[in-house]
Amino acid sequence: MTSTYYMLSRIFPVVLFFAVGCSGGDGSQGRSKAASSGSDRPLPAEVPVFNQDSAFAFVAAQLDFGPRVPNTEAHRRAAQWLAQTLGRFADTVEVQQAKVRAFDGTVLNISNIIASFDPENRSRILLCAHWDSRPFADFDPDPANHYRPIPGANDGGSGVGVLLEIARQLSMSRPNVGVDIVLFDAEDYGQHEQATTYTEDSWGLGSQHWARNPHRHDYNARYGILLDMVGAAGAQFKQEGFSMMYAPNIVRKVWAAARRIGYGAYFVDREGGFVTDDHYYVNTIRNIPTINIIHQEEGSRHGFFPQWHTMDDDLDIIDPNTLKAVGQTVLTLLFEER
Image (cartoon, helix red, strand yellow):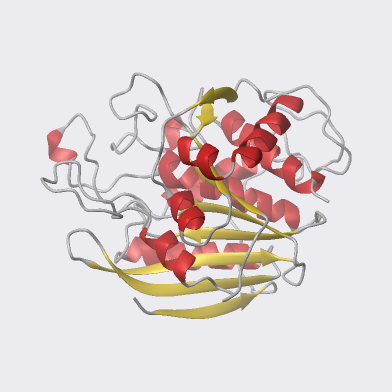
């Protein structure tokens, strides 16, 4: 696999699509206030207040491009918008371009997008999500949709929306640690549900490439947090299996922070299943202890939210309150680091 990089500076001129809702007022963020929408507990001092309406708008903006499937025009335009938007907030933004081969032999042109805050700080936290859309609605109840791309509102779009809002907050107030936000590409181009043979490591192609070829050759972080499917109404985040295997102390730290600020109903104290997701490759290839905040549901056919890998994974299922629970928890964790 080959890759190239290009970099944007923080002053990249771009117009940001941003909607301010009732909880955000004019977009300014307070400190040490009660977190709205789901928690009435005061936040620790100096922790920014996560704006769920802004995060929701960032999810909607992604869907406006259409399905973000590699090798499509929608994918190319979305990548450009993501890099430009992060360029308004971060100190540096780099786009790692590469060619990877999918399970069916298709060569995919991918872009991992990396935004860094305080890049000279050697104490770093990694935050990540995947920004691509699955090319196959292979769990849709209508077989006619099984080879159509999904909108990808929750599966992909929600994690990116939360991270874009966190980036916006970090542009106004900084924690004591450096932060890297990595948006992985080609996570969801795994083999089709109807495939007759198993293809190992067909998922997480962008994270596999980055883990072997990071944007800094000696890159390391104290720990990482992956956000995947973090926007559906009524979501519950169990303690995912590989997260507990590779970074149990980080799982406990995140879940304790969520409970402390009033989001224990979302972050439930139960172990979930093992999910081969981007964090698996960050753990096993890059050796950075990384956890996955991911919506799992017991009793469903596939173990995830009902609209997973269907045409119904659209904006209608996104709840700003869920985005808030996740975003406020991660922000709290960042600003409590010393």
